[in-house]
Image 1 (cartoon, rainbow, N blue to C red):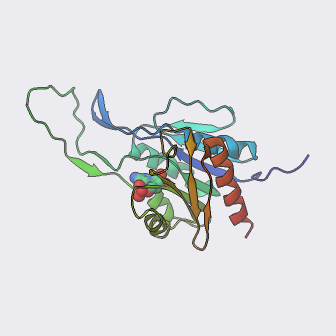
Image 2: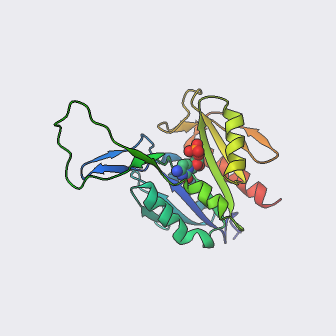
Image 3: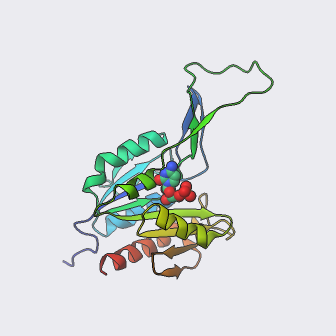
Length: 219
Ligand code: C5P
């Protein structure tokens, strides 16, 4: 029996959107499907890793029952769940589309439509991946960037600012790429390298990302 390439490694993956409550029935969220994160979780499991998948609201179900799936709702809950495991992981991959802001106060009752205009005060959510980067000791950290302008510069900026080992850039300019599609077209940057890939299914994109991570770990 051949040893699997990620055997003995613990991989934590964040996936999906986060929902930030406005009142008991409403939230601020985004269209992330969770597909990229779930594909990464499945591929890492096939390669023998112990996988912890922390996902915001997503209709997806993992195909492997040995994926340790934790479903959360808000950014704050995602942050807390990540740091329950952070010490024990070898690789962290942040593919979640975390909401940047959350309502400052959550109304305890459903808000009535009395006024003609209505505003909600928002406050910045914690940056989960930046916090992981700040607390990094041995973990290999991978982030995602979705940019509309100066994409390579911005991606490399995030690699440095969040103390990452690798960043995956998906461009919104590419047809079929981005967070609602089943396909993705990526570029991967490390501190010294740049790799470009063709448009492909998220299952195959997950293979490319994990191949790159494995190659870096061997260096
Ligand atoms: O700064 P920006 O949101 O573009 O960074 C994207 C990367 O950071 C993604 O890997 C995303 O999962 C992660 N992130 C996070 N927590 C946030 C915002 C982004 O983990 N609050």
